[in-house]
Image 1 (tube, one colour):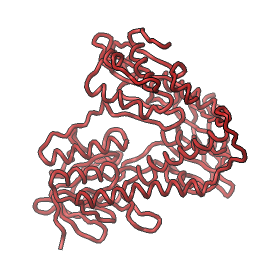
Image 2 (image 1 turned 45 degrees about the horizontal axis):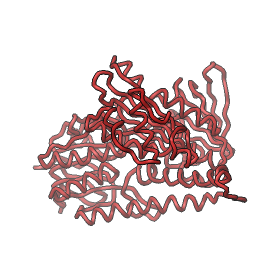
Image 3 (image 1 turned 90 degrees about the vertical axis):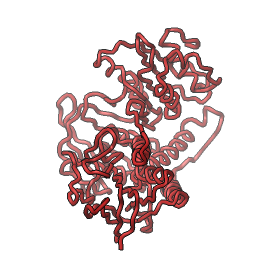
Image 4 (image 1 turned 45 degrees about the vertical axis):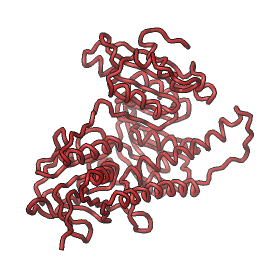
Length: 472
């Protein structure tokens, strides 16, 4: 006999598990289905983010940053460190432990909020009276409302499948067992830059091949140029405007034929190749056709502004629908959908979703870039402030980068904030709050910021919009 639920969530990543918890808080009888397995075959909810994305990559970034500091920067502080070595196996073990803590935390939250968890693949079976029959592994469930949150998968190069030995996705790159001498990346997106940074710090010779003629095209141009200067100085080799040709794999590694920006034929030999050319919505095995769930040409589930699909009572959130593939975007949509099911007015503001690249320096932004404002014909004022002039950054020994404000020329409303530098991922939150409340640059300029703190650079950049910085 099938088990009955008010809400069934397919997928236990950031969008799915958060949607399930919020729906349970609102008084619904909720089930969440997720098929991720740990190395022992047990449940590992949290999706790509927790298992092979956001969380493990940050763990490796932290470990590699400690290693680089010990080797290159401790001496500046009067600390002598000799014979510093990296135990890759131990580093990976710590990463795995961090992932497990997050997996276990989600299972605890399900129990706390009385969400019924089912370990296995969730898929549509058929429409039934008052809802839908859903397969959850070997179990059969029936739900009145269905939320699909099945996430995304790494996009492979045409004709070059991931073998996770020589040709790596975001999954395989987290399990490299030893520091490769030469590491190649195709694509200078978030995953490529972050993982390239990890292995460069640990001693790999890293080359990134990017097809676009500009670096980080989605980032404000001034910020992207500042970031590239820092990466070049660190020894991260980035070639722009390339056209990748044949990729050969063998016992000795990978050979990539490509044409550079000048039209010259080149060959790059490497021990490992990371492919970071974007992600595709994951609807494999969902059995969408059984109920007539509409997908677009990319395989994404078609939804309206409220995340409603073409089927009554079926919703979809996160990477499997339109919009940025960001964990926090998925979370916001998950909460909003649960509240809409309850008759409330869930809300997601796409204009104030922050973006972060966790390299060193970190890159973070919210709102529109300067090039977008120009393209839209918006009259604006810009203000920047370098971390070189910030006392806390000097004390940290990390003065790379700047904060940049863009404000409406007539009203002074903040239209975008862009940061490259230390702890940019934390500093951007102030800008998100300010933009949600439609603050002006003057509002931030008038707020007292603690001294000495990195956040003073935010205040000074806001002052710079009116050309009245105090410390630069």
